[in-house]
Length: 261
Image (cartoon, rainbow, N blue to C red):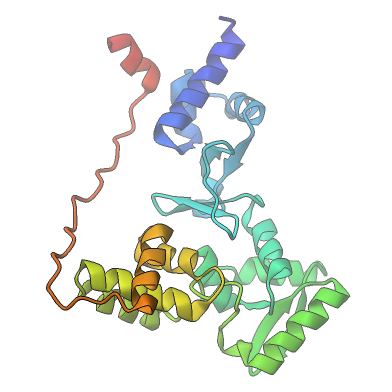
């Protein structure tokens, strides 16, 4: 195998195994001190850099499993199919039904966005308007912006509620209360409660509640069917076990491991 192809395979195998890596970890795998060499390899493999942690982590497009907002997280390190934080912020505002405040976007992106929003506004890439003492950012496209402003003003969305991102912009206290109450229920009650919350949200509710409570959409749909169909039994159901917490893999050079084996 040619050296170039061998290097690409090393990078690809490393990222497939660990999902993400830093430049230093990739340098170590390639036995090089050159940052440019690493970037040339990454470019050939269609890479992504994290929008959190100052972009210091890298993965491949083929590895990331994006949610409906275009985001993916691994070990609390966040990536976006739209690229860096600035481009991701703009895309989410443009796609939103009623614009976003900085606080609302923090709940979605899990990082501070004041500087990206201000930069986008100053560069005339987003529109900004003060509504009920809060700066709300809207799309620059006239028709889209008009719809966003009308929806926010007419439905009181300045309070922090956008129908396209209901779960993401829940107040943290409300999230905590839902999760606490959920933890007190037995297995079947949890399923039915999740089904109820999904039903209240309407279209797309299964996915949103699944992300919040860590359930499958199939389980939530089953619970909703049981609840609405009146299939309620009074006997006690065994509580689901908590399970063992996942253990984080220790980073080790794969090429070294393969030589030992």
